[in-house]
Amino acid sequence: MTTTAPMPAPTSTAARSLAPDLARGLMLLGIALAHAPQFLLDWSRGSSVLNDIAHFFTTLVTDNQARGMFVFLFGYGLGQLTQRQYARGGDWPSVRRLLRRRSFWLILIGLAHAVVLVPFDVIAVYGVTMLFLASLVRARDSVLWWLGGVTLIPGALFLTWQSVQVYTTALQGSPFTIAKYMAPTFAEHLLTNAVGWPAKTVVAILFGVPGMAWGLLAARKRMLDEPERNVALLKRIALLCLGAALAGRLPAALLAVGAWSGGTPAVWLTYAAHSFTGYIGGIGAAAAIGLACVRIGHSRGRLTNALAAMGQRSMTFYLAQSVVWVVLFYPFTLGLRDDVSFAAALAIAVVMWAASLPAASWMRRKGYRGPFESLLRRMSATPSR
Image (tube, rainbow, N blue to C red; front, side, top):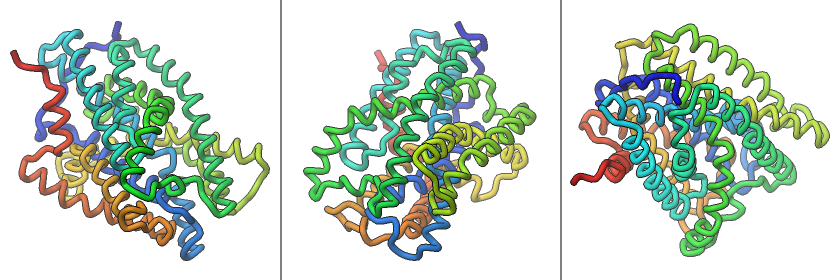
């Protein structure tokens, strides 16, 4: 079925390619910035100037774009995993069994995350998507291109509807955020999240498939594993995708801060462009990081190593972010959802992400995998006889 022969991929931490891990480390900052305002009840609190600057930045750079990079890197990681198994002598039945076991445990981890912590879960979405679409790792390139393009439409339209709801409710002084639906007690929190988890997970698959399909394609070309061999391709992708993302997302950023206003059709068209170009902007950002890694070469500084270490443990640090959100903003903990401004929420996100870098660097020096990466690796491993 596949048009490209499986290629070996790095297996040890020392041999890992820099670009995918560096992209995942930076992606976690984008995720934190995109999520932070969703835990606030009132976006108008605090300095209007600082809030407008922060709102403009998140609308232009992170909202619906960090997610695009997230799912693209998931597809890329799936391609890497498959290549490693073939390089070790595995055949398709053994690879398929591994993917199914991995899917099962991703779903369980994602369920626990969404119920106990916050409902912004992508881990279970990855698991469900991989469970039903595992055969895509052998699909022809043309099938992956078409699948990504076709599923992009409903996914982007759903994100468009979501963005329009956030915009219209924010104008009324009550933004459409998770803060409005927080339960007053931990027991109610668990019940509410458990009831809503299945539907949210199924809907989220809509925007996961396009990135997964295109990430698989990029992994076949080893676009980020061997960026020095793909400089021309990476330049084209970075320039075209980031250019299109800037043009498509700037009107929404200006609309979000009141620099212009329009009727309902204009608002829908603006956020449709914002959502569609968010996907390709995430891919363009990954390509730009690949180019940066060509320039870095083997001269890695402490910051580069720390970012890559965080990327190698992206699931652990993604879940750690959710712990911080619960502790800070939920009514049964510190309950700051009505006391923090939009700009301050972004500052919290940056500080939280920056504080994770020393922890990731320490784990790298000690040779520790992330606890959740270790759990997933151990539980999805082939059972011994």
